[in-house]
Length: 377
Image 1 (cartoon, rainbow, N blue to C red):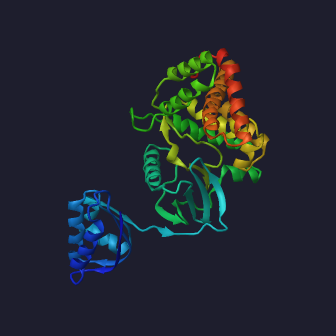
Image 2: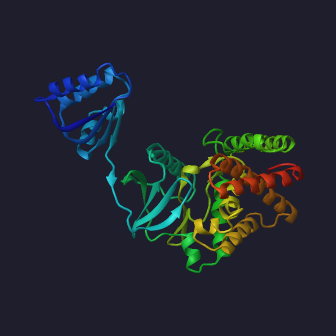
């Protein structure tokens, strides 16, 4: 139940406001949300009204507080005893340059100093706070990343604000003529830093547990022998403690004054690095399994640059390794990728293109799973 608070609540009207609120609540026993969008001031008498509501219904919370009202609630300890949130500054992205995009959001430059990641999910506040904590964790562990410093409202969506002075995504640098090979080398340095970061068990979400959902779904859409073997190979992938980015591509790598930084940290997880290469392959090649220009259109570069970036990433990450081993790793990444896409496209499966993509993935798995022994290196 949302109850709007308006104007001033002080000793002159607190009793009347409390009576009106109790009439609205009646026998309702669910969550009470006090919307303070139009609340200008609250005195100690008003605070006692809120306190009594909290005691009567423990789930009571206050949202959309102005800075002044939030300061009163924070100073008096209410922000510690209950959920109290500030109103979010409203901004417009009209005419702003799109400089990055991930699975969950689009990144815009709003001015020379500032970028904002706008989440695609309308109810993204929990995701935003989660990403901020993940970014802080990564930063403390030595991962070059930008940490959001503010949350804003963009139309009916929410966004995180970062200070990135004159930063450019690797996608933009490619379009400005910077060498694909050189940028791939730079991205591999970050990738190795991420993967060499060891976490405690359970410190981040397990990528293997997420991936098992893909394989378990696919079993029902593949010949029995193929599906059973695929699921076994997924189960056999070791549960390692390597940090993974999860959405590592040229729109999520920024360069600022010669320093490379990662953004879009909400997909941060832990597990075997093969899952990272699966996501990288998907971004540059896998999602183009039927529509050959899909990845190029998403990343804003040419198909050739997509193919080259994937090849250079593999080349420099596994530099010095046996070529046959590297080729087998590519096959592993492809197989996991198409297992992931198969589930996604079958579940969506509304357009002819999605049906063709699902059929491509199914045929790939039927042809290649029998030839494989494992999905990790």
